[in-house]
Amino acid sequence: YAVERYAIESEPSASVALSLAAQASGTLPQGIVVVANGRTVTKDNALLKSDDPPLAGSQREAHVISKLASASATHMLIQSDASPAMVRRINSNEFGILHIAAHTVLVMNHPQFSGIALAAGPADTDGVLWLRDISSMHAPRLVVLSGCKTQGNAYLAGESMQSLAQAFFFAGAHQVVGSLWSVEDDATATLMRQFYIRLLNRHMPAAEALRGAQ
Image (tube, rainbow, N blue to C red):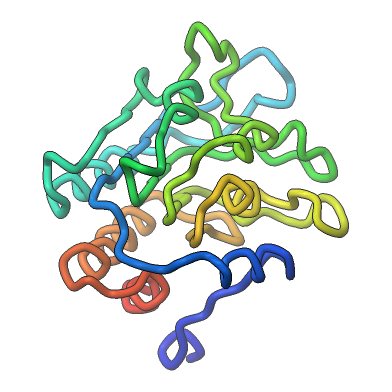
């Protein structure tokens, strides 16, 4: 009922709210980076073991976004190309939206062991974009985290990084779309299609686009 009547947004902390209020608003740069890694986490490290199924819907999300957006403005990082090193290179001056469809690694009370499960590469053998590394990125103004529990649960008190979403705020994002619970793969792909139809084709604000999709 609330979703039908209101577009709901929240701030992770008072300092982030003040920082965002002081930043100039305006139209997003046209570029979109789509990161899609549908593989399961199967590394030997016990923290990275997961029984989560492959995210087949992540590929559909990637192709839907590329069709809705201008092809020249879409940069795709899929499967083996979706490494943490490649994501860390993203420049907010070139891209206005970062969309990541992948499993998350969340370890309660240990944010240093939390992150996003991507593809392993020479510089990142575990294939994880760790929470501690996100804050040093130059994140686009809008970050969409299409995965389970990407808003996470509180890890630390005060102004510490409490979730993946908050880490992206520290990295310069103005808005972060995330989830508070486990989400079903096919339903998420459908939701994201409706979200981007409203965001890219109808030019709705992100919060309103998400409310309409829901």
